[in-house]
Length: 414
Image 1: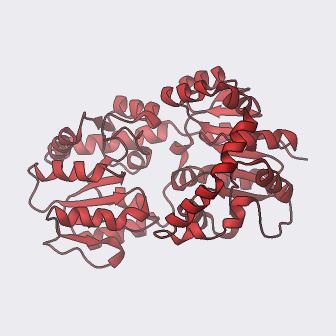
Image 2: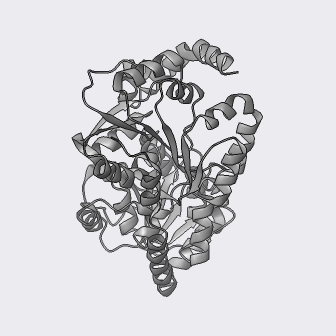
Image 3: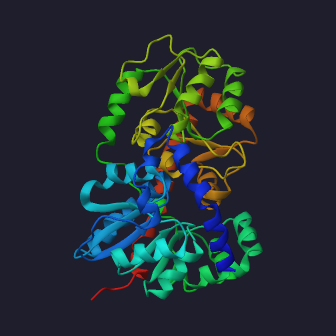
């Protein structure tokens, strides 16, 4: 089955590379370092441990693990791989030159084998659900222990893998050990053949705001003034239009500022056009100028300021949850004490969202209209907002510790 998968991947490779070039129209980073995607890298020296975090969210979530790995293995260089240029840029922003950052090659035997021979990592760590059949197989062949950490597997994804059991089963079985987020994740992973599963919790609770966050938050607050801010956080394609229409049907405080932060940078211009089409006077954060009193919407088109956006918001609506996209990370909002609201589709963060609801740190609604009504109600109820803020901070602090449990699973190096 893996050979058939490899053949299909090889046949599609020209189209994959063409799509890479096409995406480079908006994000030039897709047209850079293409050789790395085929297993070609600059010279490497020293001893490496390898961590794969596919894109921006996983890279940010991996920050506590990066620091812990560097502390535990001081004689090794951390090799950090991604699949997207935004993930790579985020790694550079967070970790500077303390890590070697490259793209993970496409999942074909020869680029993956070349990657492993080139860096010869002592072991590898995959974040969340990054299971690639040839990658795991080549790690087994070349005796590179491979760990899946912060692992989550929704019922929907488990059903999908189950339909491809002949391909996915050996990939899960080839892992050295798994650190699952929850008991439910552990049960689904075990059913697919994953070995040595431990429930370690969600590493995203261990993410701390960067040291410069207070300064960034203060600057953003000075640009926005004292206006109450409703944040649409990490919105996805198709959600902004639905949310904006619902926003316009709702009554708001006169000075309310709508702050919209799309999940993907390549969509900034598209979202700006949506705001203008609906008659919402808009400024861009990247302009770096004070928000005018007549401006109704601010487009968060900067990188590395998500904690600051949450810090200035009175209420945050979590993107990815309005349409069936699985939601986005609500823990960052809770960690800085911002009440988090989300729609019906949080299956990628099912346990965290359930716990946040139980703690009183978040609230859920069935659709965009109900979410906007809920947001308006909160903005008119400062006491409830303050209670949710306190609950969010307590909730995020109570669930920390996954990083230490994950580190305990990893091997001791001679």
